[in-house]
Length: 314
Image (cartoon, one colour):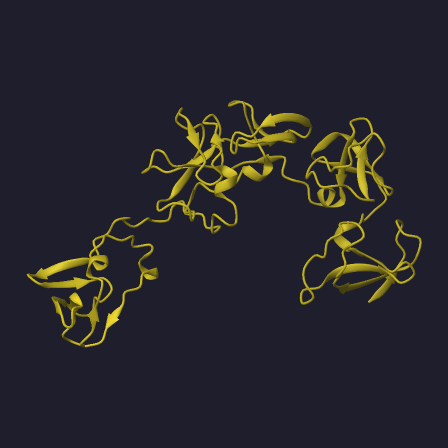
């Protein structure tokens, strides 16, 4: 713990490692958790706390790679009256500390000043060419997701395409909980009328979406498919996909099979006692499997571990 005098506050501040339970004065968030403390500043007079990452390091103007025409001036009292009050890069609401260009009405918060987005993305997932940040207010429709954007698209000039920063690394191949097969991202789609299988709204085929190669009518909006309640967050491009429909047994001889749920022994198909109907019987350990029809139904190897069969006492 140490005490420091900083140019942006009138009182001496305590610099320490801690946790701000009720939110930082600048970002209004509690970063981390009580067991993973972060560097913070605390004023014992004002009873205020700030994350170190949320406050300016120097009173000097800065040169920002996303606004190279003019230097940005540090303001300690928020945006001027003519500005819209949002960071020109991340679109978050600005607070007290901002960097501003009055000639261009361009503002960034401290986080975007310290951690600017890349000007050039050499290998984006969404496109075969490198993309360049256009750091300005411009209305556009993202080619990857089909939704509107108001500023700072990443562009491919040879292809006349524009993308949101959050969409340049959309996963190519994923599994979602609304469909049995993998779905893949592409744009544009085959021209036809499409409806998103998650939100049931129309899909504009000119822009990016996810679709199923095995089910031509199945399509999902890019942003619907990657929702946390729909997708498990796992990228499957390059991961081998086993056959979807797998016969769960192989015939050894008449009346004798070897089943994937009991591969260690062969099984016999016999009449069950007491009106149980047909059962599959293992002579080695006396185990019987009921619900014979379900055992002979083709299954997905990727979901076999979740299937349950009922055992019958002999």
